[in-house]
Length: 331
Image 1: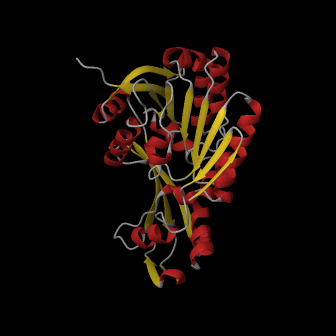
Image 2: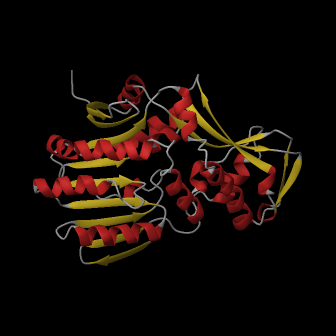
Image 3: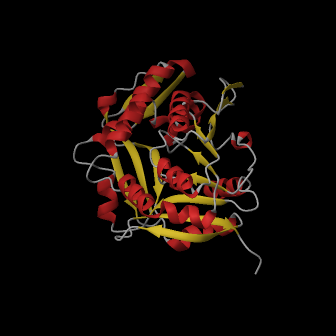
């Protein structure tokens, strides 16, 4: 583990080579099942991250701009309610939306600590440096790690804090994993902390499906890029042109599934794993789920983690919601 400090900015790197579940592990596990699947984190190499930024600019993709609009309208109210002096952000990326809350904290005179957590070291270092420059009184403790595995490196609270999971990320987990994750987050809050969760809401299926099937084909390129990642990193020979992007809303589970469908029968050699994988024509491999929420579903998940909603903020069309939650009070 590496640890560096530069005045108000500390960067900690618990994510070392070999200490975490790797692409090789996930490919070996996911592609040898009867129903093939891969975790969505492998969609986000450098090219994938750039493509996702383009997805957020597509007219069909409402979640990012709607979440930002909710924060623009309600950041001051959130800071007033929580009295937060610290923000811990899981999956921080460029911290673009986080600045709205930091500005509200600065206006309230509450600014103390920001803890960005992300697997991409260059992103953590760049955003930590930029944030520290923009907010001269703010301390920054960046963590280069997987937020499902390295939560124990997050410093203990020294004041009221908000732990944030934005971007609908919580929806990428199945219910059991989601509830276990929420229980682990509840331990980070301290006595008077809050959890801030961004959730995409259940709505007309056509609106949801359009967001994951944009007319420009950016989401398709983003999804197919994972095959290029496997080819590059594991010496595989996927023919990317022999797959197509598939995305649909599962009405029963109320989640989006992204898949890659084989257009012909094929055998794929993954040399680094000494593995050959067969695909039938039309066979699909799942690459992401994105759960859509009702207030009741989120409240049930929070209750399973010993939490309860304290405030809910949404847009006029009820497309998306931000929810502040805290430890359940005795009744």
